[in-house]
Length: 165
Length: 370
Image 1 (cartoon, one colour):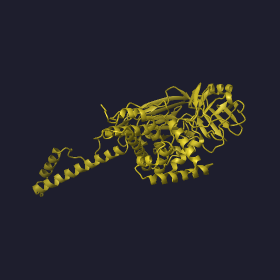
Image 2: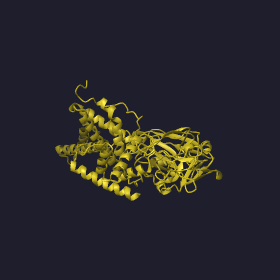
Image 3: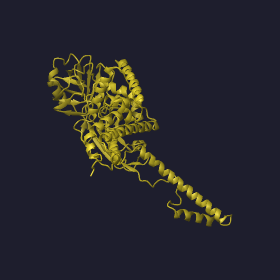
Image 4: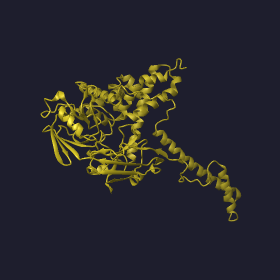
């Protein structure tokens, strides 16, 4: 049935967990992360006739996940602003059921302080292990922007994490 | 670039990702017809309806004007003209007298409520009442007015605190009074909210009641400087237990924690990337945080219990003491921590961290305004 086209259900089974993990690092809660990933695969499903290469399909899903996650976070911020609610001290990690060490909690909290673009670049760089060129393609920005976002982000992180010690 | 920071970040992301979505988690069946998340798209749809309504009004007005114009109405026949106008507009798709403010066209979306507690159960004096919602509530006013809580028949001056759910619901609200609940008491909650508004376009679809009890007032105080845990029941000191808390790199949170669950034994696994990974079945474990702080038996650490903090954040007890504390504890009991070598208190969302939120901030309602 799928023939030479991309087999979306198979890709879904193979890549679901990694994509939800990527999304959770970008939106901070598992529920939204799973929604984002569903939507990303649905978008792929709609476009599957135009994609032939599974690698391109995975890149497409990854880019959708990053974009949809950004919308989720933005929407959350708008809602919060609209309701004029005091920012809770922590919005992240609400459902990270794990023994995260203090060092890791601190690193994640510092990451959340960075501008959105820098967060995305660092997550794709250090968690997804993408090259500069791949990150550039995923985010639809130039390799130069990737480089500068990464180095600015890392500089700020070093400062924050160094200063807290 | 600092290679150390890169490594720390990589490990932290790894721990967070694997912790949030563990290897056992299976994808839900793939559904290509999955409806998009409520969010930006739905808001766009919300724009369309008022625009259509406004357009309809404009049409009606225009129709009226043109009819008046065609008939060249003077004082002579205004009734006929307006009759004509309304019959023209009713021939269109919109009802004649539609104005943007008449709303009953769209039925409200149902918001379903469930409760964490079960009727007739007995809890410790620190237990928050927890309501769980399957959709995000956007306005708490009607809810706050409708819901009443009584202790031994007397109304309580408590407040609801609106939070993101950590157990898969769209939202949660926690209710607590300013001080702990009185011991040996009966708590009754009436939640007659069926049909009332949960925000624009939302209405609760069920009404609930709850009746639970509090048991003895169990409050334990853990002090890192003396490595001791003093256990009290109804104000009387019961035991003083030697402990070993979290080491410097994985300190135990400060603040007020509430017993969430008891498990014997509890499987405990290190965070991925932790220097000395472990996976152990730990007997007599009393859970205090979602992130994994327990009061538990630590036979392997007997040499340090009472003298040094060497754990990964848990409160280590001797096996005999842990068994005693396990049997003594009820869900909802209070355990407070001081001098644990960190400034960080248990976050309110990491389990029943509700008592760590200052009262005025609690009353404000957090995600929703009370």
